[in-house]
Length: 206
Image 1 (tube, helix red, strand yellow):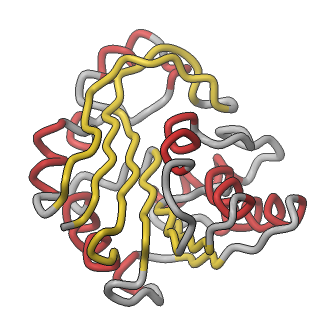
Image 2 (tube, one colour; image 1 turned 180 degrees about the vertical axis):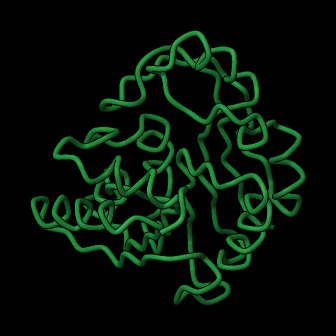
C-alpha cells in the first residue's frame, strides 16, 4: 500500500465519519438546481455527498482509493435505503465510459499534484455535452489558513491546491456558470472546522 492510500485508509478506518454524514453545503444548494440523472462523485470517501444525491433521485456512481471509505459509504447508503455504484482504484482503470454522465461532483477532490489536471481531463470525457460539473475545493490562498488553524483541514502542499486559472485551464470547454474564490466557514465532521479559502465552480459542458 502506498503512503497516499494509507493516509486515507487510516482516516476512514475510524468509527467516526471524518467529514460527517451531512452533505457539503455548496453541493446541496447547486444539485437542487439540476434535473436528476447520472452523477459521478470523485474521491468520494465515506459517501456523505453521494448518499444525499441518491436520496434525491440521482443514479449515483462514486470512486476512491480507500476500501475503508467505500465500506462506510455503503453502510451509510444502506441506512438511508439507497444504492451506490462505488468503485475502488485509479480512474483510468475503472469501469466508466465516455459521455455517460449528466453530472460530476468534485467536492474536496484533492488529487496528488502530478495527476490532478490529467484526472480533470479524464473526467471531462465521461460527461455528456450539456452536463454539469460541481466543484468545491481549497484554493492556493488556503495555505495560510490551514497553517494557522490545522483544524480547518486541507492539503499543506501548495501544488495540490487550486486557483481560478487552473480551473479555467482544466475545463476550457465549459460555460462557467459560477466560478469564484470565497472565504467560508466549514463545519464538516472532525477534519473541516474553521475558516478557509475555497474555489467554487459550476460549469456546463459545451
